[in-house]
Structure formats: structure tokens, C-alpha cells
Amino acid sequence: MSIDWQSLMVPLIVPVVKIAVLLFALMTAAAYLVLLERWIAAWVQDRLGPNRVGIPLTKIKMFGLGQPLADGLKFIFKEEYTPAHVDKALYILAPVVILSAALAIFAVIPFGDVLPIEVPGVEGPIAMVEAPGVDVGMIYVFAMSSIAVYGVILGGWASNNKYSFLGGLRSSAQLIAYEIPLGLGILGVVLAAGSLRLEEIINGQAASGQWNAFSQPLGLMVFLIASFAEAARLPFDLPECEQELIGGYHTEYAGMKLLLFLIAEFLHMVVAAFLIVILFFGGWHFWGMEVGPDVTVTWPMAIVRIAVLLAKVMAVIVFFMLVRWSWPRFRFDQLMNLAWKVMLPLGIVNLIAVACVVEFAHVRELEGGVASPWIAVGVGWVVALVAWFLAGRYAPLHTDNRPRLEVLRAPDFEPETALARQREAALR
Amino acid sequence: MNSNDPDIKWIDEPQLGLAGKMYLPLVVQGLTTTARHLFSPKVTVSFPESRPQIGNPLIYRGVHRLNKDEQGRVKCVACFLCATACPAHCIDIVGIESPWPDREKYPESFTIDELRCIFCGMCEEACPVDAIELTSLCDLTGRSREEMIFDKEKLLSVYDQTVAAEPMKSRAMGGTV
Image 1 (cartoon, one colour):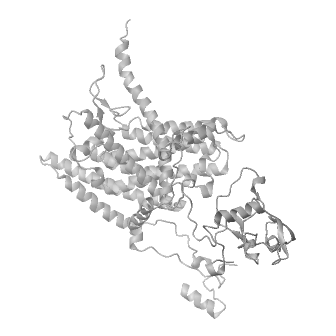
Image 2 (tube, chains in turn red, orange):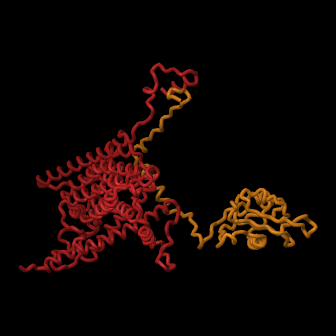
Image 3 (cartoon, chains in turn orange, blue):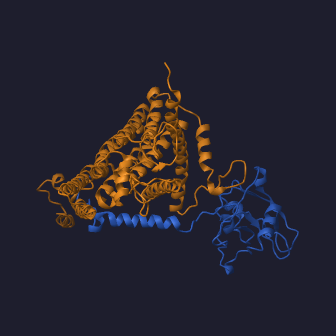
């Protein structure tokens, strides 16, 4: 029995190389995003931020670009302390679960279009995604990001600490609540694109030149806000709000295990940024590019596409970081009300609007005509403005916890002094 | 105190206006503020490369100095008022009979423990002859505890070092003492 090892090995090399490059890039990116986060935090507060660490053992500063290395070294040399009261197995498992789930999401996320490399044994150009052609790409992303909840809950539970546990509980409630508007935002895009593959969703937007952000502004808002909550970024960082919960679910963690949690958090933000760009801002597409199935992608085109995608992602990440310093944290009842009473209805409205537009286009197609793409844009914006106005005007953003005077006071309550009677009359 | 107490004033929280309820105007407002600060001039001083600007040297409380009079003698008359006023007890004076006719005593030794000092400036206020003053030198460092105990010579040398930039404080100059 002879096995053609070469034909087996060669197709295997490409994904392995991709995974290696991706892992290295993601870890480096996470480290440098920490630096960017610190810079932006400093600049917003009129400070300079880390600008001293440069090349080790020299006096070259390079605007502090060596800081991630120093931060990493610090974490490595920290004591790997495990408190005595924790559930050891789960305690160690939690950061591994959360980081591996966060990394696994990137298997289906395209980092560009294709690279025009000829590899013997592989058909066509190399797709800039670890697992090209996954038909359930969007569902996979959704499933994997849900697994992150396990990491948070396990961490909170295994720590055997009230603060950690409260952080884990809050986090689970928050992530489950916001997964619904997140899913509704995705559904609108999937409905419009007619595919769950992220590459297809980008191609659809590139072909029409009309990004989903223009035709589904309401979906974008819902998805954007829900992804802030899913990534547990301010103003939704209740799972780890320092003032109330010390560190939240990772209070008891130190050293490398804490670092795994922190990297996972940054990766969640990166995933959210990628999804926002891919689903709503056309991925690697920019106007003026040659697009279409019959266009052969050359090297310059491939590089421009990667650069455009990454630039967009970077812009979204900077937006995430600016938002962090713009608003205070939501109270928990406000958070829940926003999810269930505002975002959920808005998501459903967006879904219905998109469904109507898609069905209308479908009917026109069956009749032999072509529906103008501007109908989608017009309907999208009108629906978004009306729904947003109604939600802002009538949806309760917080629980009314004012004292209920009519319950607190007996009906025959009569104040004793004349001044108090005056006040009472003014109150009623 | 129960809820029926007439002295309790019940206040409703202010209601949001229409723009506030729409949220987006406030979002834009908040982001604009953040973005403006992102590019505004920074207040951090990169210390060893650039020095902090002391707003008003007359009221800044840095390292002490012992002033000299026109003849180059120490102005101090060893009255112990500064040592008495000092809440940190960091001033130690040994006064002996003065060789000069214009005063009875002068300090044979005058030491300030700069590590103990809390830089409250009360010695400066207490001094009747404007002999002890706080300069605007703010980077006070040393490699040992002994080095941080400033004796009379050291304090006089601080005067020599700073007198050009900071003449003696007086009310006429707008100073506080």
C-alpha cells in the first residue's frame, strides 16, 4: 500500500503556516494594543503615556515601543501564585478556555482577500483566512464567542471568592442578554448577503459597493452596542468594575494566568472590531477597487486589500478605546433594560425591515426586473430613525426606583406644621 | 426617621430632554470632548529632559537656604523661633555668643533634616530676620540619610546657588514673609 505523502503533506503545510503566522500576529497585536490602550488613556487625560522603554540595554527610546516586551517580562517573572482555597482544576482551566475560545474564533475571520501564491497541490490563490470556505462561519463565530462565557464563569466560580463569583454571575447575565441583540444584528446582515460565510458577506458588499452600514444603520447600532457589551468594554465592563468587585472574575488570578485573561479580553475586542468591519463596513472593500469574481488578484491588489481591512479594524479599535474614556459605566439595571427593552426590539425591527427589503428585491427579480439598491438604503434609514426615536422616547432606560409616596404614606397623613403641609401639597 | 417625616424633602431626578433621550447628541458631545483632549497639549513634564515650571518661586516651598547679609555673614540670630515652629522637629540649632556688635547670638551649627521636613514653610514664616527661606529647588535627592541632613555650610551654599535666580523674599517683592 503506497500513500502519496507529498500530496497529503503539501495541503497541510499551508494551514499550519497560516496558523503560526496568525498566532504570532495576534499575540503581538494584543501586546501592542495594550500599549495603544495606555497611550490613548494617557492622551485623553492630557498625559504623555508610556514613552520611555525602547530597545533593551540601549538608551534608544522609540516612543515607548518596547513597553509590551517589558510588560510581558513582568508577567513572566511574577509569582505563579495559586490561592489555597480555589478549585485547582477549574482555576487552571478557566484562562485556557477563554483564551483558546478567543483564538479559535479567528479560524474563520478573513484578514484580507487572497494572496496570489502558487502552491503545488493547492487550487487557486491562498485565501487570507485559516479555514477558507466554512459555510457556517457566522454561526461558528457566534458559538465560539459564547464559549468565552464559560471561561468567565469558571474563573469566577473556581476562585471561591465572593467578588470573583459576583463578577462571573454578572458577566454571564450580561453576555447572555447581549447575545440576542448581537445575533439579531448578524441576522440582518446574513439575510441581506444570503450566506453565512464571512468571505461571501464581504464579496456581496464589494460587488454592490454598498456597505451594510448604509442599508442597515439600525442593525449597525444594535450590533455595535451589543459587541461593546460582549467584549465587556466600558461602558459595559460590569464583570470587572474595579470600584465594586476589585477585579471581577479574575480577582484571584496572578502572573501568566491573569495575562491569559487579559489577552483574551483584548482578543474579544479585536474580534468585535473585525466583525463590525466585515459585516457592516465592507471588509477589505473600498470604492475605486476592481472587484468581481473574474478579477485576478495581483500582489499590489492583495496588499492594498489587507491594508484597507486592517486600517478599518484599527479605526474601530481606536473608537472602542475612545469610548472607554467618554462614558461612565452603566448601572446593572440600566444594562439589562438596555438589552431587553431597547436593543432587542430595535434588533427585531431591523430584521423585519431587512426581510421586507430582501423579499421585495426577490419578487422584483422573479418578475424580471431589478430592485434599486437605494430602496434598501432609504428603507433602512427611515426605519432606523423612526425606531430610534420611538425607543428613545418611550423605552425605559432605567428602573424607576423613586420612593412611591402614595404607598409609603397613609391616605389620611396630615403633616403637623404649616410649613410641612405646604411642602406636602407641593409634592402631591 | 420615617418616610412621613415632614423634614424629608423628596426630590425627583431631573428629566432628560428630547435630545438627551435620543442619546446620539450626547454621544457626539462626549466623543468630541474625548477627541479634543486626545490632541490637546499635554501637561506631563518629561522630568530629566525638561524641568517643571515653578509658577511663583516666591510661594514655592522647596529646599531650604540660610540667607546671608550684605557682609556675607549668616543672617540667623539663633532665636530658635523656626525650631519651635517646626512641626516635624527637623531643625537643630546650636547658638553661641555673636562676635559681631549688631546681635547677641549667632548659630554655631544649624542643621535641617531634609528627610524629616514636611516642607510646610512654617520656619520661613516664623523667622524674624528673614534668615531661613524655602527656595524653588524641587529635585532634592541624596544617596544616604547622612547626605540629606543639611548643615549650616550646605544651607549657606544653597543660598549662593540660588540667590541669582531668586533674590531674598520680602513683602516689598510680593513675597509672603
